[in-house]
Length: 306
Ligand SMILES: [Fe+2]
Ligand SMILES: [Fe+2]
Image (cartoon, rainbow, N blue to C red):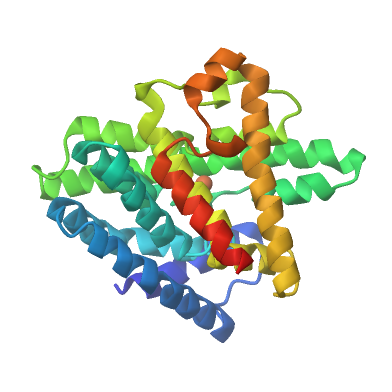
């Protein structure tokens, strides 16, 4: 079956379960077509970057038609084109910051990381809406926000496990068991660092360590976070919050998102000593530790100010 049609069917199933009107409307089709158009450029760039890594491109080509229906199912929570953006950033960072084996793991984690969103029973709650909420409402939003973040990671790892095992069976040389376990570990924990933003205290268990063990996770985190600084990501935020797409609002949103990147690092400094913070080497108080991730962030900030 065509992945888009399958995705639209899955979207109807989701709406039925959530008790919403479940027919597919022309508006749904236009929305998906627009998201797919917006996905074309980052996909082309990612393919070009990964040209020399044919095994990675082959894995992306094999997995994408199976991933796409899940993304369409979740498109009202997170748009389809978020994924090729993260893949593209992960490729750029990974090519310069990790080994070829980890590049493959990082890129496959990027293409899979939000696959569980459409299956979540709990609504996604943004950090922005928690910030704006009345005090009485805040604690409920916090609790639900954390639960839904955890749910999309858990479901995402389960779905990814099935897809990766199938792909390994078809192409045994393409993926080692260790690759799968590293990819699932990233998918299953990729948003942990957002949890302290919603809790009112910092627990180290949500934070990454500064050693080599967590370096690939760090690179993936940076790739995922860079989306929030892209014009496409900012537009999605503005639409979600029903704000007008004006230059002033785009700047305001960028400032807010950068503030979140800074706030996470403030939380790190509550949990770690100054000496440990130095070991992390976060650039400019933002969440970027890799030189490539930081340069990409700077470019995006600059281009939004132009
Ligand atoms: Fe996520
Ligand atoms: Fe994401």
